[in-house]
Every structure is written in structure tokens, then in C-alpha cells.
Length: 111
Image 1: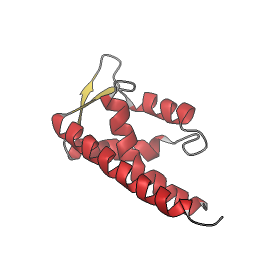
Image 2: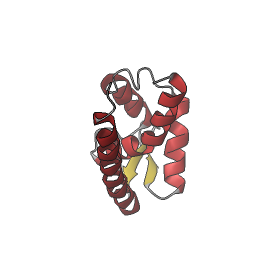
Image 3: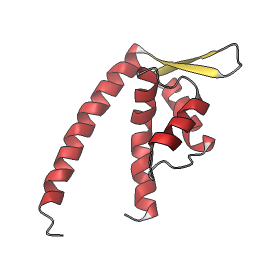
Image 4: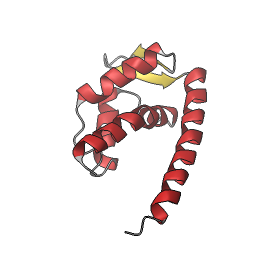
């Protein structure tokens, strides 16, 4: 997969990944999310930049999926809302269907 296609795929999944991290309580602020992506994201999310996740977090906040509170450390701490939980459930369901469909086509590619 060339880098432009990979970038597009990453952009399309980042909301779902960040919502999952927040929902699971694994990461509550942006810096922790960057670290988690870098450590667990393998080659796909190696060395993510703050400029790649903060716009997504702000967009999710505008959609009402997360809310941010200023913590004592002066870092925003994100928590998922009920609307965000519903959106995440739908994203996961769609992702499962999507990956199953793609896998079906790739199994018969003859490569």
C-alpha cells in the first residue's frame, strides 16, 4: 500500500481508535494517546504527531462524543459521553462488516 493510501486509511480509523482508548480508560489526555499510538500502533502509527490527533479530539468534542475537563495538571482530560459510546458501538459494528467484506475479496485475489 502506498503512503497516500495508508494515510487515508489511518485518517478514517483515528476517531474510532481514540474513542476506544478513551472509553476503555486507557488514555485520558492527548499526550497519553500519542504514546499509546506510538507504542502499540506498530508501523501504522509510529511516531504520531500532536497535530494529527488534536484536531480529531476537538472534532469529537464538537460532535458531543467526548467532553474535556481541565485537570490539576492543566492537561485536558477526555471522557466519553453517552453519545460517544453510541457512536463507537456503531463504528465498531461497521468496521467489523467492512473488514469481513474486504477479507472476503482478498481471499480470492490469486496473489
